[in-house]
Image (cartoon, rainbow, N blue to C red):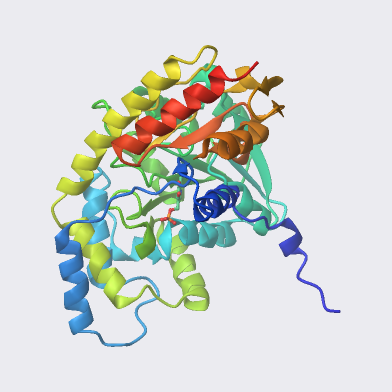
Length: 401
Ligand SMILES: Cc1ncc(COP(=O)(O)O)c(C=O)c1O
């Protein structure tokens, strides 16, 4: 019997998708499930995006497109970069992909040989580990516990980079914690990065338009432009424009890296479909009122979630300032018994599965993100289910012996 390739032994299905599947199955059985699991923005883009898609459909060439990305889409991304304080790139610095996820996979293939090390803060977005394992790279986890607001400290980064990882991957605003680095924090990290010239820097900044509390979006390149020749900025339309299913992501990189991504695209995907590219360009070029309004709504929802969690004795929650996630430390529940179900909560996975079975609320266990004391709440649903889901979580805690 032929066997699957060895790498499939390392590849795991996404933990987030597993929770989402379980929630869907319960829903299909008629349970009133409230899902705080999957990180979807839960809104649709503006009408101008659909109009652009329809116009592209009318004019469809039916052909393969550019491996780098359609010129109009690249130009729209250049404009978006400029709005983010990142002027001076040209089309030759860019490459599109089927979502930021595929861009990150391409970057791993382009930058990491088997046995190379990739460093990133923990908690991390689950896919970072999956990608590293796929290309057989080692992971250097930089622990950022809730006691430190899940944030990376400059001296910690300095010590990690002294080990000369091939790649440092930095995510801001963060999935799963929702934390946002402030101006002075980014400036301090940028100073450290300059001192370690042998490491590529990947900035996964796909939540850059979802920053609350007037903190603003800051990027190490704003402070240290000399980092640009080894830094790759990754972005996406998924979260900002409510377009996760349209699957468009980008990289802005040194020309050699962008060209490597183009070569990989030519082998993997060929191109992003024409209609999708037109819709993505319209989202980037068009009015920004939908993302602006959603950012304000998410910030208000963040307050609602934090207020509900603050009422639960022993639950600690650093205050997120962006994206749409809250990542409370729920370890106060560990070792306790859930009265009505009789289940013992030994860890975050028990917590989430008992919560799902008894209260029909789906959250993702923190261990999926490298922090087993926590769980992730993705709070993009409407206000009524949000309030009801939080009420059920409070009730669940109250039922622990
Ligand atoms: C931090 C982070 N990076 C990248 C992605 C991938 O986004 P895309 O939908 O563009 O593939 C996600 C999606 O959840 C994410 O949270």
